[in-house]
Length: 385
Image (cartoon, rainbow, N blue to C red):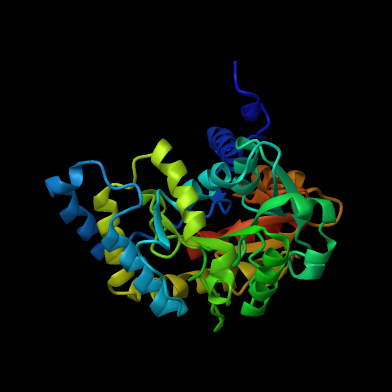
């Protein structure tokens, strides 16, 4: 009944976690959910108000343009110029997306033919691998190891896979490991892509969630990056807009044309009132972003100290709202996650769900109140793991 491409997909990790949470709640367990990266903080009021005004305008009730309103794309270009010191042509080098996940998924249909290889980091956001499978491509795992600070060892990638690869996914600041990189890393990636004729697809939704003076560079800040790749970004994490579904891709105009061609055949663009909200987010007051960082930093420090007190091995991240912790000796990540759920009512994401190289770790999210994080840490400490 189903297409073979569907049968090749593993169960979507977060859907499985939702199922387990529901089962636990039916048993009356008080769940503290530290598994999903969905901001619990509200969208800033001026953004909501901009959407409300635009929603009342009949001009916005019709089909939007496929590539997005020029005014939104100009706002993206201005934001990148201001925040990342990158110049973009709003017409040719910015494409509006229904959230960056949509663009990531559609990019595989734009750039991969049957049997083509995509270099996919492991562990990683599952959409990279799954989108490759849906496009009948072949995901080739590129391990991100603790020894290499969770960055790819380019020299160790199978030479035949590199020769056949059409695209490479990257994501820094990284989900799930919270690894952060410097601009020099992207220079190596640009050289690698140019040498092997590989298109780089860099996913950058955590670019503004940084701490302790660290500033996350854009892939496109490196000379030559526009020649070899594009960057996805989103308003979801920066402005607490996960449910609004608006993001964008920027960079190489030819690659964006390919992505746009796929999109014109499978979707009808982003509701213009949502784009108006996006303009308000990108061009309006940025105090909400700074306030978010203060909240996440406090939560990060509480969780980090609590995990250390509970005997877990974890590093304090410079970016994202995740902590990537080693599971205790003798545990696999799923078994440890189930232990926390069943005995402490704490939900975390098992590392194996992000790829084979994620085994041995679990991901904690900071998307609950500090009071609940404190409670979760107290429960973990009582487990005496």
